Length: 349
Ligand SMILES: [Mn+2]
Image 1: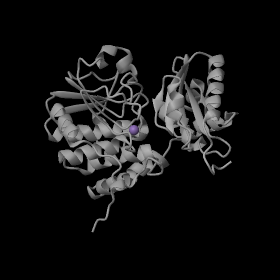
Image 2: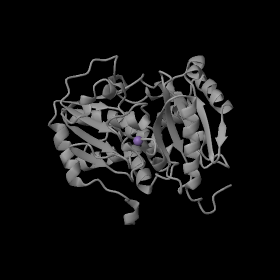
Image 3: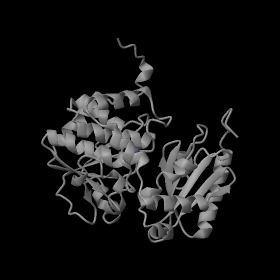
Image 4: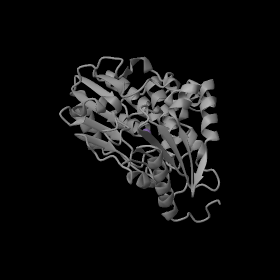
């Protein structure tokens, strides 16, 4: 017998909005699902689950990687061979965009940069996300900031739609949830998140490849890259930070996605309040920046917003233009902003 309180369901997708999303998606001939730049597990796996669900409704949908290559650690995702890569594959003649996991429709890599009119609303957008900073730019918006991941939001949509969960769909949704919660370890993980995963396991989804490919298996080049990052660690006030230069990636033969776990590893280093990693741009004209914190009194999305970025309270990002002087000034400013945030009671020193 179930004795669940209301607290177990901290957020719900409005059933009318869910129905409207399905109506718009089913009305399309071809749906393009462009992923956010520097795509991660949630950003790619949730679109793949959507592609498979829409196929059951007779709608063609194509996830599109909007910049760079297909990250090799995500090749295990069922249906990954159907993913288009911008610049490599021809775009299908789409009449609807579905953005999943995209807080900002401008941060869609070369797809947006080369032709910003693609995102100006002339082609309608269905917007499915879990970022607090999402400004609800779609004709239908399913934005649930309390959800751990887009995978969790999409699972909820499928429940409302009555979509049959195949083992492939279940595996993709679990990859989204596990990717964003670091394997159900972040504070964004709720009883609802864990129940969703249990339902996906019941539907035949296998957790083993998800855990292996997201957290265990790595190429040798990753160790080379991590060794660079750890050797370059610096401290500025309450922040611990490191920088990933293009030369480091070249020297190690590593791809961008291999550096993703470093900032999570740095966060929680005793004596630090925020961890920061700077990834040098391809053209070396600036840096993409990632912030992490374990302190609930620090809101890194608010800090990132000072620099035109955004994200979640404990995980956020932004971009910094310029050279070494701008970089140093940026780091000092971030350190000042972190120092202004109240200390958590009983925080470890
Ligand atoms: Mn996400």
